[in-house]
Length: 90
Image 1 (cartoon, helix red, strand yellow):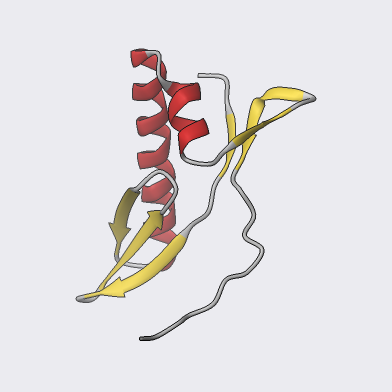
Image 2 (cartoon, rainbow, N blue to C red):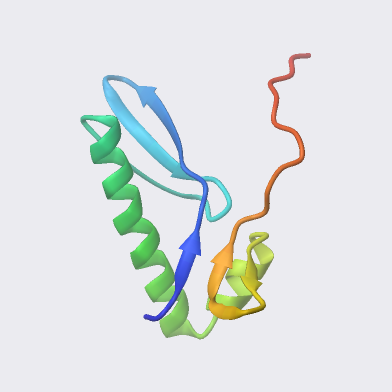
């Protein structure tokens, strides 16, 4: 697979494990440390993208998730950049 993907990673601690999440793709993995969870997420994202590519849906999935290709390098995809990130309560 010839793709370069810039994606967001969020890490949470849950029940003594660290869970890493790519929210745009809804892909997650876990590990005993933050670094282990991030490595496991990278593997999970790569496998997810490979499966999308084999099904012929890679560009559609990335576009629907808010990723955009770099006009100068079509194999490079970037995640959308939020204008604001904050916590809110009701």
